[in-house]
Image (cartoon, rainbow over all chains, first blue to last red; front, side, top):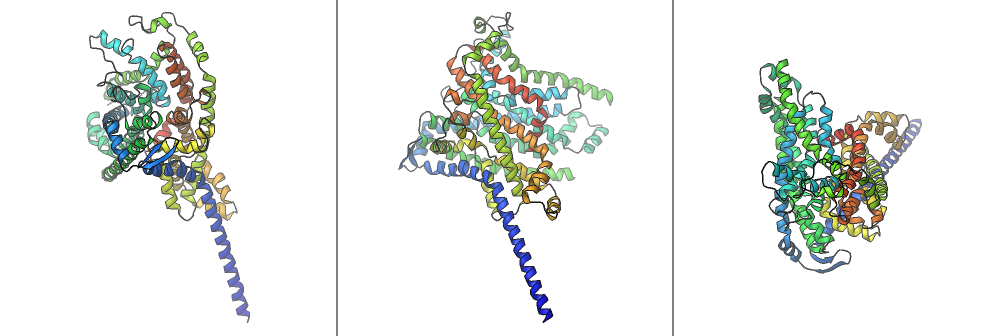
Length: 318
Length: 274
């Protein structure tokens, strides 16, 4: 009898403990949902739904603010590719290759140069941060005056040393190069900082041992530093590529997409189709193509990165 | 060994100085052009340094466009968006790392999509949504779509994973509430990251051009970069005035970034190097 009572009490106690625990769990669940609610809701509303809409709308005739009109199949895709969309993808490709190569190489070289305990280092670092922190519109206007073919200092210097002057922003052959140069100047300080952070993380004893063994600075960089940096280089290439595929503001400010479309990137094409010509269908079609390309490139680069990452890891273990 | 080190430094310095000068010379050019008299700018043979600096250009330009209004709009937009991004990222990052709830992984991937889907791909429907809410030319339209950051949430999640869970367990035994554990125990640990993320988000919002370009079109609602770009449309040829306007926009953010340089460097390297 007595043992039965204790069992009942024990059962009751364990049930209420479990209930309490469940109540605690439910409370924790609610707390979790509440914490992620703003980020989740806003991402869902302003990224996920718009992505689905971009893809869906690309099959309809539509207007910017008047809703969808009728199903047109792949018409928007062909119209968009024929009306300069294909060229804008090609321009984006050229821009991306030029910008990524320049910004990564210069970032690496300056990163290596700055990775020394020299005096005034923070002053030099500041010089590389300045273009990053100032609005692109402002630096863009500065470049427009710097590179003005009539009074800009760059053409004045070219003329002074007897070189032919260049119409930087109005010559179809020069404009994209000028935009790439500007973007590199504007952005590569970020790569310098990333490389400096990566260099700080390298094993010091390895480098010191090499120095004691008589390896000069170039040999140390070539056979120790660079192999160890490969994962960082790969990551910086990925980040720079993603930035390059989006390039818009410098185009808007420097060239407005011209001359003759030679600097109309995919992002600028989407913008001008939707917001100045109100062809939202063609804009959505090219946006969908750009999305697929971006995802494909990102996945590809992540794969490569993971492989390099694994190799880099082995190298640092060895 | 000492001499070799000195030698290599002597080699580095000229290279560094030249490259640094190339980096900042456009800013000198901006100042020089901003204080040139109107007649001297377009003259190809005029001396590069102005002989009679016209400091009055800057004041004249300040009166040509409502720069005070642009500053105020930029401050309201950047402060609100940055505060929103930092707070919502802290909340979401903590929840994804340290709180248990069903469906966490799927929800995390939904948030992560915000990091992987470029804005240019979704901008047409986003502006249609903002318009449907009646938010064109309002601070709501500028701010609300920008108060969450997938990048920030991701960073905080990574950070809170590295903090031992025992801290929270101990506080729980002492009877602290879930909110209190988050706000008083875990959040203070993330202070350095919060500082860096705040500075970086603020800069990104302050310099954001495309989003305000799509959401606002009245002078009254323009933020600084947009106001500057509209200024150029109205004063096409007067390059000294254009540079004076640029100077008005550049100097304040330049000074702010000098003081917060350390956090900018921390913030930039945070995302990539773990």
